[in-house]
Length: 348
Ligand code: SAH
Image (cartoon, rainbow, N blue to C red; front, side, top):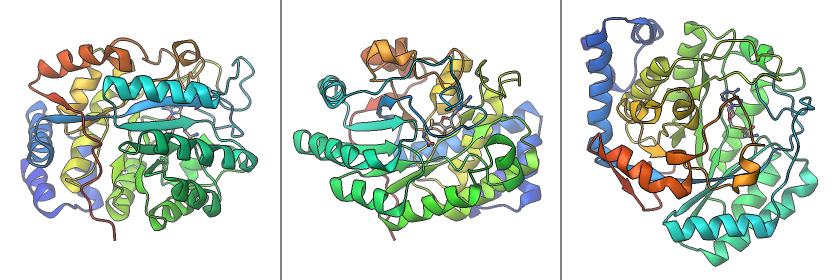
């Protein structure tokens, strides 16, 4: 197994059987070797520095009905909110004062009629804080909308492909959503010059090791600048609310495998990791992740952005608790890097 880890580190690619072996191996020493190698590669490129992104949850209004997601259109137990321009600017201001230089604007998917409003918002943030990066995570849109937002000043876009396996995609999403369209969106975003992030939920219902291998192969081919992966966590009012949560350890393995395959990728240790285990965030970093995304949303709307049950949004997960995060990182010898943290990967 160690030989396979070394091979992945050297060649940045394995065949599907080899990926499978790394995903199912159970000798704790082999697993620790994988994590250790990923950590070393991460430290070679980024040192023991962790980039921060301030997450602003713009709205829980969504036109989609993804079967796993707590803010799906069909969930009538959610009270819906939209942040207005002033609220978003207040979040950015607070974040900027704490030291954040990237704002991630995430939310449910809106209709195209509201895309110009987003463009105005991007322009306003950029004119007030030109030294900050803006990352959007607002779902699937026509190429023209992505172009509009890019022209307005957006730098990065997060759109997880969720799963590359069409059959599994169909089991997790309503009929009108397709994996082909999501992948098309990712290609457009790349073409438009965004730094692009994609990824999966680990341990989603019906997911298999085989489908995860397909995801790894897709990620290695697509070479995103950022890779967003977190364990699936059930939300009790969704159709998949009775399925068990995914595993922190398998997610760590995927961070490590992707770190070795794409050494320069920006890999957040996600909120879902912190939500499932008290030490989840640190375990992600110890497996090669190098980004954390604390929550900058107004405190009163945070609980309404409930993608899954018991989602962490306080303490070290909160922008205001960033000193707690710094203390936590110090226990494993890491520290915060307050820079914008752009992708070191060259754009083609
Ligand atoms: N509307 C945007 C943002 C979605 S929320 C979009 O479509 O991209 C961001 C991510 O949260 C999703 O891509 C999904 O992978 C994750 N997510 C949603 N529900 C989840 C759940 N129950 N458990 C874990 N992650 C979940």
